[in-house]
Image (tube, rainbow, N blue to C red):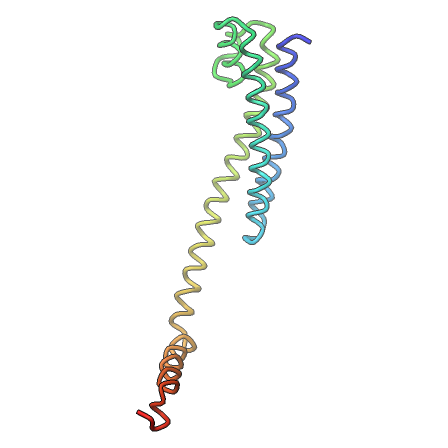
Length: 159
């Protein structure tokens, strides 16, 4: 198998991982806060797999001349115009563009998630403030004080 074909195969695997990453990110956005950790853990596993594929691609790049490897990297990163690439690297560019689409959609969902986390934090903070201002919270302060007086015998005439 040619090295470019190996890279294309690895890109196809990356595309599937990015599709799953986007899917898990979308689940995270609509999930309850107590499920966030589960989805974050799944996403981290997917990131680890993507990074492993990237390392395999980097090793394959060592088989090419420096200038050609640089062109492959440009195609992989979609960091150039498609017309600047040799014909045999166009499939690499096209496949990498699909990956970028998944990554950008996931990134937009992450912005939504960041806003949601901030909103949840504000809601929790407000609930804590309300609880601290409630009658029960004020009564609890007196109850704690009463318990300490009672325990020390002040109310039993032992003082």
